Length: 252
Ligand SMILES: [Zn+2]
Image (cartoon, rainbow, N blue to C red; front, side, top):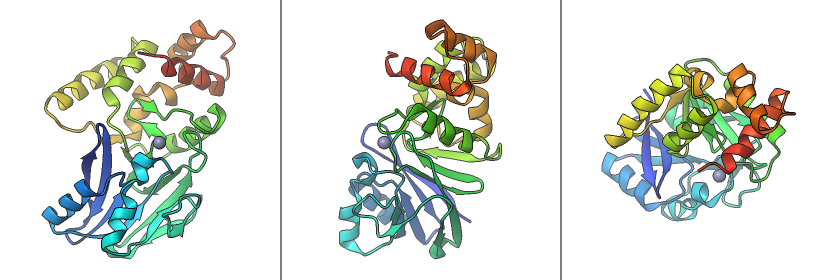
């Protein structure tokens, strides 16, 4: 039985740790010390590291973690600390957890961005967030739209483990796009309560994201109309997506 636990680091990152009571696999350890302490407290040994993309808040802890022991580091080939480069449709076999994950290339936030999927778990880094998506640092809107479309086709019950606790601020924006979405209103209330209680709002599910995340809803009339009020020539879903991504970039 595999459990997935968040180890909070920095102001709003989570290192997701998959573990079975003995071995652990860490996704995007941006910082080593909090993870090391957590593993020690749970008496788990680190068996592997998965990286989604090259940003330092996702990779910064790897070198320090490797100082203790050599563990395989799976990730995009452009990251120096990666020992096992992977790409779209390759598989990561984690013998310690008896788990095999499928690698999905999901460029947009960065060009090298990968997601790891083993039903029902999806580790998607900074691609898909709860009620939001990553910023376009390297790729085009069309790339990220395609990546998100691929993730949104995963089964309803897929658990989305993204790296950042951005949910409440994403929901403020989502409500500006779709003020009349009752599921979004309800979700924003429930998540605000979770944060007040100090609990993570993650993981979310693909079903919830399809119902409340404007970036997956670029074909829904209310979202299209909201986009066209800003950029009237946003007609195709990819253009609606590009419009609301630009809108979000300047949203406070
Ligand atoms: Zn990033």
